[in-house]
Image (cartoon, rainbow, N blue to C red; front, side, top):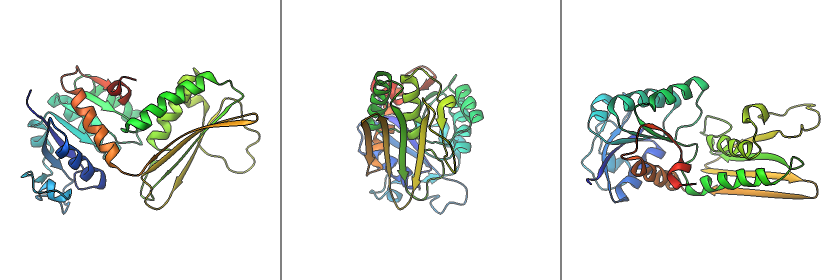
Length: 268
């Protein structure tokens, strides 16, 4: 089989550059394009040079229709509004769409579900193997421990991150909820301020910290009487997310249309 032709959306950003580097070093892949918004200073520049590599002979463009017409898949860590639009185009082009974007509304998610009827979409709040293993462990621990163990999820990210809780935190919260056979929407507690009263049994709490250049840290705390169990993941390099996204794209090639997760990619 020929190399999979993959384009990077948001190619000039920090994550876009990491995705380009991961693609360039992965056998079976070809860096086939890069997309940026109109007016970006990166337009027309070589995507390899923008990512700190040798020139790859691939200029960054803002012509999304032409780009999608000549590739097998895209890697997308952009913004919710843009990702929803890209998903519709991926559905028309019948290509693989790997989504690491977070912060979607319920309406956005419904549109992604619709696009997945024709596009092969792999969507995950976090593309790293470690975090996805952590989610599987979180579900298992939540299922094993009784309701006397309170579940709290703590995360920290860099000062530029826009959404909170992070997509990874929500993924971990969803894993904990599934382990307890409850709906996260009914048990999620996002804020605590003032006299909130005692903690309700079964709640799944979230706390989000922002500052500096932290790539991503997540901790799931199971706090019970006399003991506490903690699962933690610390990311120090965006490359882990990029490599996971590339792995997801290669896995999705040839799969039927649908909405898949990294748990599917990893066989968890």
